[in-house]
Length: 268
Image (cartoon, rainbow, N blue to C red; front, top):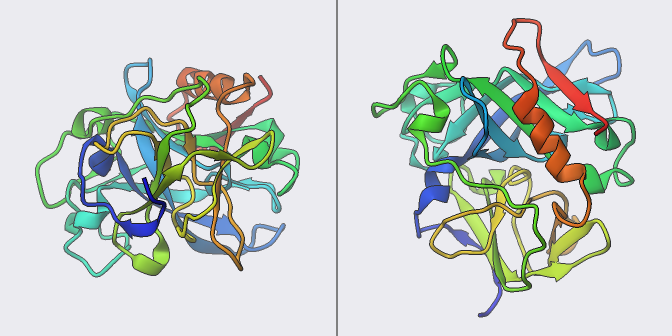
């Protein structure tokens, strides 16, 4: 199959509803006296705990490794491409099934204790959301439980085949279109997979990588980084080490839906 640099995703499938826009704030300085709004992408993925749901994304969409702080005021908007609004906003009533306010984030200390690019291998993270009390209704009826409202995708920690791979996400330059690129899976280095022709840009970070054109999972990586002057997208390897799987396991384990919870790190 020929490489596809970037196009609108028209296949639908489970990924259409499981993936969405993440809107959040990160600090503008180390004093944490000013915060700016940012966007990323994420995917509702399967978990083993009742009473909660997980959203997989990039670690840099969860924790600011430069200013050493977790994101705040985080919302997840599944299938945001179906919004009746003009683009990303905090008005959840104009989105297909509304949005969910995330309770807290989880990243590995390999990400939080270093800075990019030396921590690129750990650029994956999770948001955890309670199944009650976090949903703002949208255009259509939906369960207040994220894992009931959308078809969650699985996550794989096995080594993927070097076959046609689809990276998806919400590039802010094409807001609110759900975008994708596709080509044979390549390898950038020991830490990252690589899709050399991918044209997804800012805002697509954290979006899922899958290998089935039907829009089914499992997710094998997430959009992590690219170059500003040439195409290409890197995605951290979930396989080959325990760091990705143990972070997923830890995100399944933490249970803190209190108002002060913002984030947790694990050195598993």
